[in-house]
Amino acid sequence: NEREFERFSDGVLTNTKLASDARFSSGPARQRHRDEMPAEIDRVFSTLSSDEVIKRLEQAGIANARLNSMQEFWRHPQLQARGEPRRR
Image 1 (cartoon, rainbow, N blue to C red):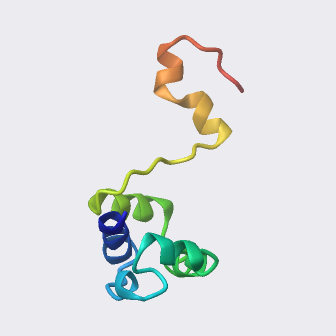
Image 2 (cartoon, one colour):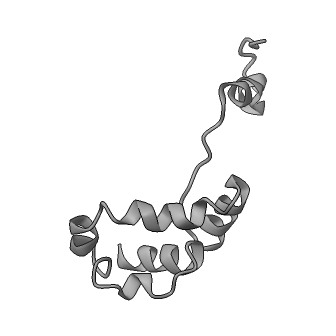
């Protein structure tokens, strides 16, 4: 939606002009130019750690989730609380 894209472009990508760029100013326009968006995201995300990206997403109110490695998965507290087997 427009409001979330504006929060994403302004707050996460720190590009206040992106939401008003004709290529990205509406859902249909973003769909037509969807091949161009990854470069805009990569330009910013490539300079940040995953923790920094998550912090920006949370500050902007953008839903997100972190993908755990298999090692992190097996060590997850919820899995341990359920008594699931541990991988070594």
